[in-house]
Amino acid sequence: MAPPDIRSLRRDELAAELQAWGEPTYRVDQVLDWLYRRRVTAWEAMTNLPRTVRDRLGRQFALQPLALVHKQGARDATQKFLWRLADGALIESVLIPANPTLFGDSSDRHTLCVSTQVGCAYGCRFCASGLAGWKRDLGVAEIVEQVLAVERWASNASVVRGDSSVAEPRTTDTGPRTIDNLVIMGMGEPLANYDSLLQALRILNAPWGGGIGARKITVSTSGLAPQIRRLAGEPLQVRLAVSLHGATDAVRARLMPVNRKYPLAELTAACEAYQRQKGRMITLEYILIAGINDGLEQVRPLGQLARRLHAKVNLIPYNTVEGLAWERPAEATQAAFLAALERLNVTATLRREKGHDIDAACGQLRLRTEREGLAGR
Ligand code: SAH
Ligand code: SF4
Image (tube, rainbow, N blue to C red; front, side, top):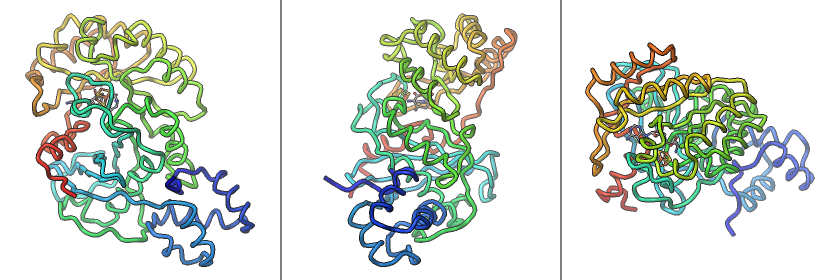
């Protein structure tokens, strides 16, 4: 069996391992510093460790960086990374500046959207990630490494400048952090890979690890009711976004097969339990798709749901996917939907889709790359 990647261990687990080797207690902080502050990708780079320790770490653990297949930059400086994993599978991460910047300008606040699975088993009708089905779950380190790898590339200033050239990453890097928000909205259903997701989030949240505040981490789910309840019981205070996309079972089931397993009544009850336990606001994601769910008759049930859950609604104009017939509604329709929702005193926003010109919606870059055979090994 392949050795586990060292970035799948929490501090206490690594400390126990190093203690068993008879190493002094300061050793664990030295290793963590190399992994998460300097973000090295090779044992040899850990120059303050004795060679015997580096060799032993190398025998016991993997330290596998993500391989960049290509990177695309959009006009608003959104950066999309397509990675190849050790087994050849492709995943993507998207770096989104907090403020839209003109091409060439840099922005110092960024959100990173990370993937949790290769493909997705949930087969939402509108989604590129679901088209080719589920291949496998990502391991803990494959989730964590998306953040580290993007930080490595971002510190290589060309990335934030929107320069699409692919330069070699530096092997050590202590530059300032680029990513301050994390959204688990890339490819895959995060709550279907629950244990690895949670371990990765603990590592990314820890002060010795990624150092990203829990309130700055949002997990998006298509509505796995039992796992939402389980998440409610976790000490980690992450934010929850639920992909609703339909406010009645009839409309939602047409778009999302998962609604047959967990219909709205069950999903809503789980969200209520989450909200009660955590006392924080849930976000309901609602993609607007022309002629499917953008009718004003959806507004009343959506408003009722949002008020019951103390949730805010995030309206997202649909991003067209090649090979799928769905389209985004006209801007006037989007605005009318928002206005009707606001008349019901629901907090709602209409998102201006960033990165539309680079297939920024989940799974689209991978899909296109595979179709065009761009990912030749
Ligand atoms: N599986 C999880 C997280 C990944 S999808 C989920 O479904 O929530 C992240 C978000 O992107 C979801 O809200 C999803 O519905 C949305 N999405 C998928 N395809 C899209 C598209 N073509 N245009 C706009 N949003 C899309
Ligand atoms: Fe999977 Fe989410 Fe896409 Fe649905 S929207 S197929 S759950 S990634």
